[in-house]
Length: 216
Image (cartoon, one colour):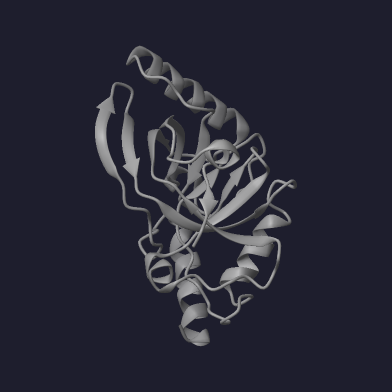
């Protein structure tokens, strides 16, 4: 992708994001396999590829590190489109797009676009950035709007777990946050979701507990 076009697209995405328009971001494909009372969806996600890095700072170090990777700090100098949503696991909430952060091992991720995955993700120049494959997973998801601060997220976590318990389903791990918008999006136009695994990915040991296997 040309440098000028890349930054024009980035500017357009940011401008539209203010009012909650996120159509320029590639979003993951999933299948809704069941709907539960309380507006909870059970979704199947295929495996995905992500750039990840250790995160012990709530995103202040990890996010810039991953952003540098997608803006050219890789072996081909390729500029990679951002995707949505942000997926954040753990107690610290870093309001960034698009990234996954996990308390298990302190990990933050950017999921990579399908076209980049198809031709092979470029190798990071920063040794602290890794390319990993996230196995297929089934998630229970509850959507909400507003600013996803700790109180709001925890309240929706409880609603999600209550809905699962009433449906006789068991959560596999703790709920985590999915956000589809940049921090500057008008709160009532935001799309947020809390989600929890309800089936384990096909991995083992540490890789299974963290939901990742090495790419390649």
